[in-house]
Figure 1 (spheres, rainbow, N blue to C red):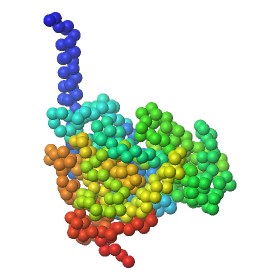
Figure 2 (tube, helix red, strand yellow):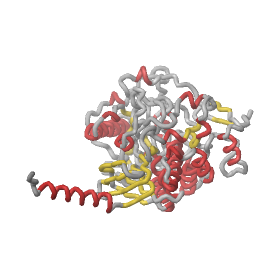
Figure 3 (cartoon, rainbow, N blue to C red):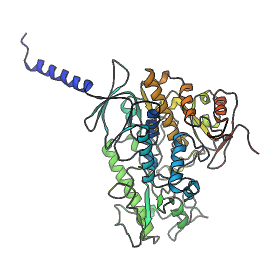
Figure 4 (cartoon, rainbow, N blue to C red):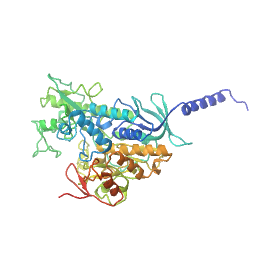
Length: 509
């Protein structure tokens, strides 16, 4: 048989290409794709535990929802400040002159400028020794067949090998690309929000009329002459606040005003998880226009002509955040699944023995901008106590050497309304980082690492495993109480207390 000389040449070139890809590459113990809140915490914790760690982030900041999305009002866990979350809060208090200074708006006990938050996370990553590639995305990934870990090709052309890969993105796209099985319960996504942060200028700063502006979208955002007032509520049953209360809701310590207003403000519905990148970009542009319309309404209809989009926070041309506030991601099927019933009945299974993160926020869903809001916005979730999240939510059931560290963890649709909050993301991310470091150092798959090993590291680093309010991390006996709790030797009693739910071993009167 006559062989064409081209075929051997192609074979040699393919071999050389393979050698280049697999031979000339950077090697890390842990690579986190996406510097979201959970991804940032995972990277910091992995590096603190001795793992050589890289973060690949498309934008210029770490921190995700807390910084890049502009949601700089922390929801929940004010009395459960431990681990990286606690350190972040302490840094904020140090920057602004104490915790009382952080109570500048009425939506949260901890508010801050997103730029300050990004600086704190950058400092944490630097001090831990995390390598960070900003402005870089993931072009391709391949699970190694001959050994543990992953081969990654980055958008800057770099080739990277990782023993453990962590999805720290906002939407869980990396886990999906890696083959993680979705936890699909057929429910619709929550509204997203393009946050706006305003400041008061000494002159009028009127926006041009945004595309498709319609004042009807915002007339019932607060008490005003245009609102349809039905006994203090708007037609959707949402309470109408005064304009002053609406604006002071998210007042930051430096006087800026964060607009993340769910009452016919800048919430926006689109089923973005099912979209291709081009469709998402178009949808997010529409969400941005909706927020600009809200600001335009405040200026034109309510007379706040000197309130304009702050020009000194986000590194963007229009002054809006780097991306929207996503309340939903692609959720994986994990070794554990956090459910609403698990939060209500923490001792009905052995999940509490694998606890690694805590939350105290109620189940909060945003669906009022969905055309089917009447069916979705009144789910009757009911109260929950404070809760723990088990380690298995970050471990996919089928894909080895992959972890998830943000909203794409294994949580059911209902309970996502509480697990999605910033302190819980930081806690789950820290646990994922500790698990990744342990797995990389020992040559085990993450699923082979006992939860007790991860819990020991988290306790070393001042984390809550169970939401017991009896003792704080700095109190004598804190670690002992937490260890007794995960062994089942003591049990807490939970109760719903508005926006800050509780669990006590010794329930106060």
